[in-house]
Image 1 (cartoon, rainbow, N blue to C red):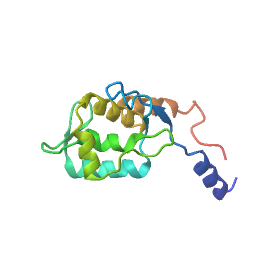
Image 2: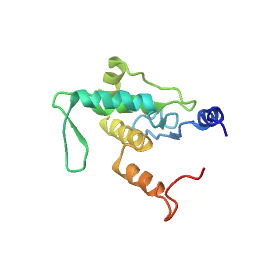
Image 3: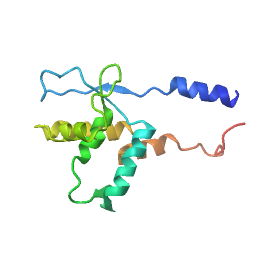
Image 4: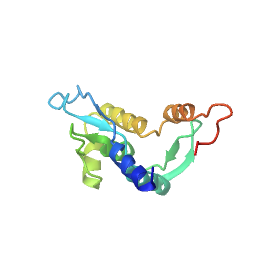
Length: 145
């Protein structure tokens, strides 16, 4: 396989996993919203935001955000809330982040934040699962040529 063929196959197979996201708290929308993990560009944007607004880490290894930083969960949630066709419901605009972050039901935003992080591989559990799945078998630590 040539590098060009490999890149074409990666692009072809690189579809985000989109899952239904129940929102019984929002009855008129329940059943019509979906969630997906962040793209690499979206993850980079989030990490840049964290780097500019973060402090130390807590005992779980989570980055602590400086006091006064608003809508941290909404900044992640807007990146993963999509329609069935994988179209984002919100953009990264401050207006959209504020709109979702100021909603009347913080539990929905928190669940959405957690799910986007999970699907993006940003939780400790996701990292452990990835590490477990990537372990090599004894005596076969290098890829075959």
